[in-house]
Length: 181
Image (cartoon, rainbow, N blue to C red; front, side):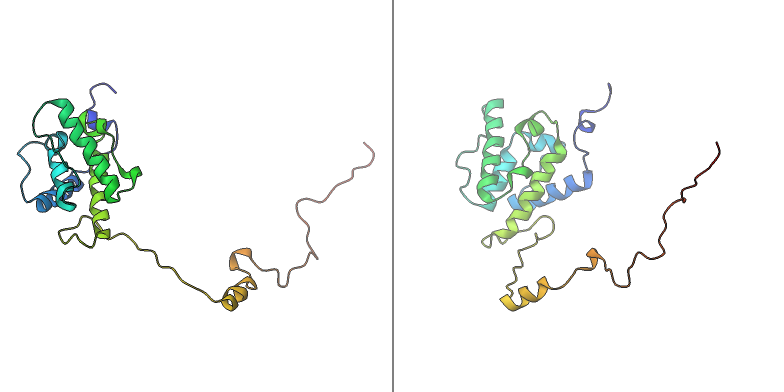
């Protein structure tokens, strides 16, 4: 549709999620966002790089604080690589163009939340977390006897055939044979 703002084209933005992500980033890096919109504050990648270096010191060796568009896009790329090293699933990462061209800011916020969840898995991180703690694997070990006993049980989803017979069943209309036509 012509005339629609660009942010409505991709993922639906949720201002409360963005505020939550921004508050978490500010708490982690210890500084406030500049007084410009959320997506513009993140666009040069400097804040994202600071965030990664605070979560895992030294994970990004050189943050470009000046030097134009390509340097800033490099910051975003370094942030994405650092996220993967840190353990963020690659399916949760935004593409550089999602942030740089502001094509999908909702996905950028999703990546920040995924990073916040991944921080739970790093015992060395003592700072604030973002979002709920991810579920951990709960493995159970069963003895051979218990496993064998489970094979004899018919699950209720399979149904039961107790008291079932075919006597007295007639489906649909019976056949009518008409003579003399």
